[in-house]
Amino acid sequence: MKRLSPAVVLIAATAFVIAIDAIIVVAPQALADPAPSATISAAPAIADASPTVGAFNGDPLPAGTLYFADPNATPVPTPTPSPTLEPTPTPKPTPVPTPYDTVWNARTYAKNRLGAAGYACIDNVFTKESKWNPYAGTPTGAYGIPQAYPGSKMATFGSNWRTSPLTQVKWGIWYVTSRYGSACAAWDFWQANGWY
Image (cartoon, helix red, strand yellow):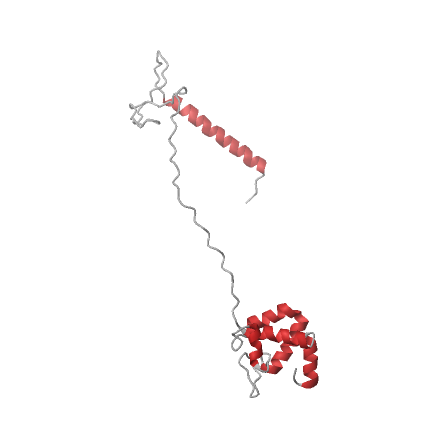
C-alpha cells in the first residue's frame, strides 16, 4: 500500500469536512415546506418529522418543529455538590528493617566493615577455625565462629553470644584488629602458627 503524504491527507480531510457541512446546511432546506410563509418563524416546519424532545426542559415539541435555543436566555447554573469531608488516611510508618541473625548476614557485616581484602583474610581465619559454624566448640572451651577462648568473652558484644553469628563476628573483628592490627595480619599469624 502506498503511503500518503501529510499534505494529501490534510486536503482529503478538509474536503470531507466541507462535504459534511454542506449536507447539514442543504438537507434541511431541501426538506423544508415548499410553500413560502408570510412570516419567518424561529421554528420552521419540517415535513413528516417525528416529535422530538425539547433540548433544555424535556417538554415534547409539536410534530415537525425544530428547537432553537434562545440566544438571550441566561443559563441557570447547576449547583455543585459540596465535597464530602473524609479523614485523610495517616500513612503507615516505614518499618525499620531488622537484620536477621544469620551467618550470611554476619559475613555481609564483615565484608562491609573490613572491605574486600580484609574480608578475604578474616574469611580464611574463620573458615580454618570453625568453618563459620556459630556452634563450633572444642573440648578446651573455645567456641563459635572466631573460636573465642573462653567463649564467654564474646558476652561483651551481646548476651546472645552462644547463638548469634553476628555477635560472634563482631567480637572476632574486634579481637583481630585489637590484637594484630588487621584481619590480614591475623591471617599471616595463623598461617605461620596454625592458630591466632
